[in-house]
Length: 194
Length: 180
Image (tube, rainbow over all chains, first blue to last red; front, side):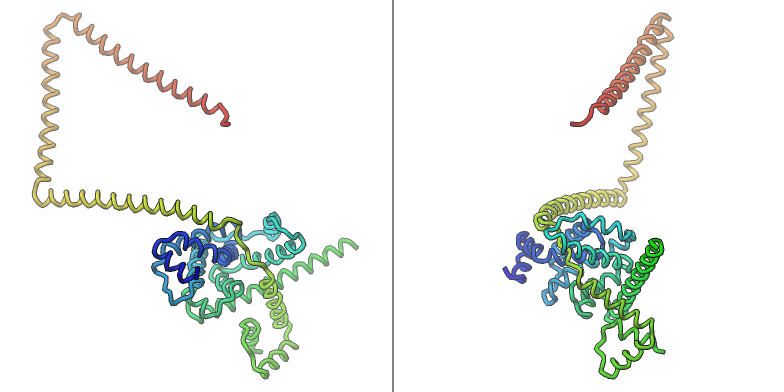
């Protein structure tokens, strides 16, 4: 069934049609929530809540706008609200690695590489403010243009630009700090070995 | 040096003309900070692009359907309660307005006051009649009646205390039995 048809039927109260929408968009919505909130359980709850809000407010959806943008804007706003209510606790990198390493995976080698990348990114994202994080996630994980981010987060283009700039700078600084810490630890370890 | 400008060129992914690109390259040759910033941002961006999409656990749609049914039910109950509460509030408000407008509120208040006064007067009359009869009877009768009356009160109190004690014992016994 086409997306427009599904939306039309769901608006008329067809729950199965909306279930099809959920099936289609579960991955991007869950990914956005995970990147925003940091844990799979929080992401699951937030994704479920986002779909519920979308279902309840489906009559408000403007069919001229892309559905994905509308849906992700609901998820992003919900996650930002959640973050404001309960600030994301800064997790230790080792804790995150231990937590994610428990996930089952078909290919251990590739998954280990993915986990490493994912955790570093998640650690860096956790240091950002919720608004900057949302902009960065939409830009790089969902490949949204600046205009689409404006629509999704209901902010001006200049706000998107400044938030993106701040987020990129923060990510870069975080990365260089992590690298210098690692270098210092390596040197310390070498000295101890000698 | 215009660090802000170069920082913007590095981070904002702006499409630079050949001349501007050359200017940036020349600056990077001499500026360690900007070079580090660019290297860090490239590495960070690589980290982002290499990270995988986090997919939900299998059965997300089924879980959503269950959640939706539950939430729909809760929403229905909430709406029903809200309507009921609204109707009760409306009925109460309209009756108060009616009473205030028609003057029956003061009438009702006076009636209530009269009723309470009549009950108090009845109880007082009853007590004085009882004391009159008690003073004209032989002393053994009121004493016996008193014993029976206070004896009954004591008996009821003891039954009540035993009932509470029994309840407490049962609860303690239930807490000790482990749940299977």
